[in-house]
Image: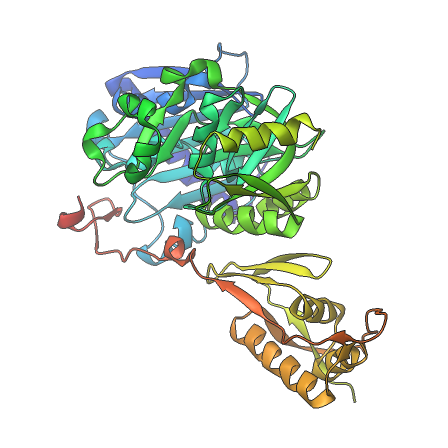
Length: 351
Length: 143
């Protein structure tokens, strides 16, 4: 098939970046890990050791055996540890848009983003189901990337599918659970971590993948949990499991729950309700009925502002989701045990 | 001649349910919620109404004098225009039918909640320099 001239330019860049990955792998060695993401086999390939050690821990709970065919292959490399330079960017410095989208290098097939200051290239060829993740140096990769690796690539991969990564947490039982929606600082992580001491399973505290059909469902993406360091005193039993105890002046406190609470992790569950946490300062936790618009307000702006491109489609998927399940405000109390009690009560009475 | 209507700004995505509305301006990163009379006005705008028609529909439903309602509608439309949530359209407006009510309801000034806490995520880091290959590089103090 002959590609339109405009698209050829985009495909050529993707192919040039792919060939740099292959060169990096030839020099530094290739490692491969498979994960089942949103129910589909995803292959990750790493040139050298540096990025593999940073990107795989958050996904370990989704590890799976190699499949005959990958739904998506993501190839990671950095130039410093592999001593392999990236190809030259064919765009000019004025092409870097908000959220890193490269003007002129995004269409239905190819998506490209590079955010100056964060210094990560994400690019995907949706037709081939292949993506490249490149950093000039593994030393410059921001810490938060380890907590949600490939978030941007998964957002683009979700296009055309009834799934969408969203800025939300999720806890539940195998028979059903809740999506915990809210922008940063509203109590998502506190609410999800408070459930570790209950029979509720952990789907995520920051980014999860929602599915609209055949029923509202949430897939776990990351086993990480992140809280503000000042909040650690509320979870003293977790403190010894900190992944970054020496960096709390510049990073959130981070945990890999697959290493500390593997029995609490779940690949996903049907969603019976959306809860929107709100910190009240009162001791007790209560639930109040909320409207789908309140849930959409909690979920959509923050998700859309994190993820480059395809905002309309992402919004439409979130819109469809919030109208399928009842929504509640979770007036989260200071007595943490009340949070899982309230959620379990909701689930056990059939919502 | 009918007044010109408005249309939703092309960079705005929104959803409404009953009289609640959420809107996201993809250019600024700001998002907005409306309810009550504000949500009702948005519903009229989506149908293609203009200021006078909206004010007339509200006056049929709310217990307030026409001048107060008209001023409130104009002020509110001014805010929506300023926030680039709507733009003036060349299409003629329609005369909206007032929503049903049993007796006249107390009128509340239409309000819009503005949330600008996402803007930081859209701010671009200035490109200070590029390396030999052309990739942006961070200033030395950020490396």
